[in-house]
Image (cartoon, rainbow, N blue to C red; front, side):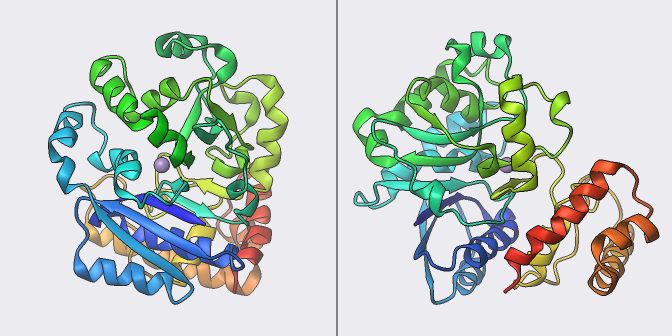
Length: 334
Ligand SMILES: [Mn+2]
């Protein structure tokens, strides 16, 4: 199973946690990690190699040769340059790698990926899962494709590399980004949606579960509601969009799962960061201690008890998800 990440030094820690979660939930698979980057220090490379251990390989690739092309993307929006690294997979990965599973670093794998990996991609460019939002006629019109195609979230892409090489998909995406820079809110996600329309395959939402909130309030068609609800309970890949699980402001009910996996890695002593960079380190320390105490209490009394009784978290859905997180945790324990 070939897994691709596109990161720089800033995302090494979450990427390491994600790798650890992949390895814990996919023990029967032979995993090869491919990491495309502009810079990762020797020390960080070594940490990622250590995380992969002896059962998985890690290969690093640099986008240095494509600096000019990347410079053009820098002008578009406020997104970090690393979102484009994955688009270089056809140029950088060995030609005998025929498909690859790309994952955003703000994800956590909580179940086997074998079924997803075995998705039949004959005549398909990519397999993806729909976005929790933007199933919207205005967006489809902007992107100029049929509404039935849907709008997917690009955090998980099972890429048919052979198809991309044969049909110059990466080049078409680069071209699209540059020609449509004014209408693109999420540059590469828009371009990926536009260029792969008609050749993509939808897989269940559980392979990129990007919202745990009430399905009825999401901007998605009704026929997808049941699949989304089911996926929230049995996610295989959790995508932490918005505030990240390594931020102390995070209120995601599955954050404890991410923190557990982090506690099993080389980054176990990395403190929670502030989502808003200005706040003082003192505050940060306080929250880290509080979270630490909470984790100890959870290990003693169970999560739903601690959340409900001690931290008085409100809302039926929160209680429900926290109970569910305890079940999901079983798969992540060694
Ligand atoms: Mn993401």
